[in-house]
Each structure stands twice: as structure tokens, then as C-alpha cells.
Length: 310
Ligand SMILES: [Zn+2]
Image 1: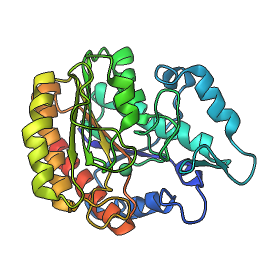
Image 2: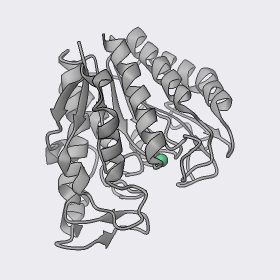
Image 3: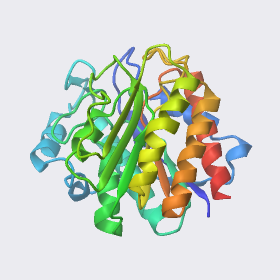
């Protein structure tokens, strides 16, 4: 079974304005990187729109309607100082959530072994009723709830290696013991949540790293904290918030990861998925703002997914 790659041109039309780090060129860089011969075996599909009913399993309907109503006819609207929307943002947000949901459908149906969603806007900072940190809808959390409702996956895990803590995913999961959220992230850093003491019902595992930490500390956090807890949780489906802004070249964080660290963590997560859920893994793009580091890191992440699928 192949690795599935989902994206959509509408994700390029979410315009965040001059100088914003979360920009369409990020997806163009990824598209270039994944266009080479090495990726010929990917099964490529355009992301469908997520149904509003699927989004509203996580986000209250009045919130979804408020986001839709906030879309400008021209120029930009700031939902907060970081989170900017433009006329193309609604369609992009539906496709970004729809990619993760469709990836879950295809992997659960056995059409693909695993999947990567190259989409924007990202999702992990979006709380059930609050857009923030470049995020409108929490793509990965919507997909996790979909895996349960549509496919009977009782226990769903999200592992997040973005340099920022996924406060939105934690907020969505912390009161439900059949959802697991494990995260490495830099602290202190935006959004300020993610202390090791934030454990939910025992289903939240935060392993904060200090500015300047690199691959050694990152791998130790996974080996010592996240992977054992993920193993004990024994998911029926594993989702990944794949942010590549913990790379040493990234302008938004001070962690010092390199491409080999992203390959390593991908291998570890695939191993956990193989052990517990037949290798079913869906990864979706979060951050990553240095274009060269982003395209190299995404390429090695997707290559590692493909090796497990062949
Ligand atoms: Zn980030």
C-alpha cells in the first residue's frame, strides 16, 4: 500500500500579507521538494473540503459561522495580532481540515498505509472556540474525532513535534481519556502552555525543551517520556502534528534539530503505529518557516513514511 500525499491549490490562496512567516511559499517549497523522481511512488490526491458537520464535532457551530462571517471580500482581517485571513482563507481552511479527514478515511479503509497532508493554514493552536497562532480550524484534532466517529477507532493519539506547544489540541483532548496528546516544544515560547505538569486525565504528555536544545535532548524526551506513554496508551490510530520549526535554521524558535532528527522521530512513530495499529499513521503539516529547512525536512519525513509503506 502506498503513502498518500494530500494537498490542494486553494491552500496557496490563504494570503496572510507581506512579511508574514506563514506564507504560501511554504507549500510551494514542499511541492518542489516532493516533485522529484524519488517521490514518484506517492499516491497523490487533491484534498476535498471538510464537511461543516465534521468540523463541528470539534468547533462549536457559532464559532465556525463566526470564522466564515469574518472572511473579508478584499484585503485582510486580523483575528488576532498573528492570525490573518483574506478572501481565500475559508476555502483553504476547509481543504486543510478536509485533507486530514480524507487521509484518515483512506488509511482506515486500507487504501493507503500512511499519509502526509501538505496544507495550510496549520491547526494545532486553534482551540475549540478560538482561532490563534496562524490557525483557524484544528485539522489534526478534527481528524482524530473523525477517526472515532466514522471508523470506530476507540483510542486516538496525536504526537506533535512542532517547536510550539499545540495548545488547541491539548484543550480539545484534555478531558477525554481515550484521546492522547504528546508534545515536544520549546519553553518558554508562544503560546506559553505545555508545562510538564499539564497532564489532563493522564492522557496529556508534555515534554518541554529549553532554548538551544538539540537532537540529543529531543530524542531523550521521546525515549524517556512520549514514546513509553504512547506505547501504554496503545492507539487504534496515530496522527502526527508535523511542524518543522524546531529546525536549527528556523527563525521562530531556538531549538537545534536537523533533518536526521525528523527522520528519527518519524521512524519511532511508525514503529509505534506498526506495533499498535497496523501502521496506520496520518501526518499533517503544522509550522516550519525557513523554506530550505522546511523542504528538506518535509522530504525526509515523507521519504521515511514511504519506506514504511513499501
Ligand atoms: Zn510552530
